[in-house]
Image (cartoon, rainbow, N blue to C red; front, side):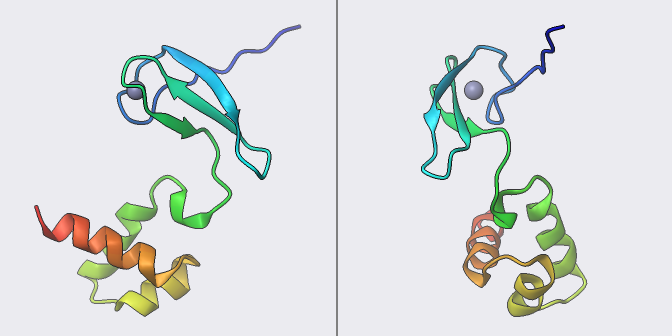
Length: 90
Ligand SMILES: [Zn+2]
């Protein structure tokens, strides 16, 4: 029995995906043929898990500091800073 999982591009939600080699740690990389960007389906780093950026926003609204957030979410304070800088420009 063959089993398929549908993979969509995390940048443009297209289905036109091709394999694009592996990361040095062995994870599969994928490339989108529509937007030409590459991505992974699973990330080992906590900073790249889906929903982390929403949690950063939420904790910031509840007046947690940068180092609080980094400690609780087990990500680096640089990830928190770069996300806050990106969103504060809006
Ligand atoms: Zn895409």
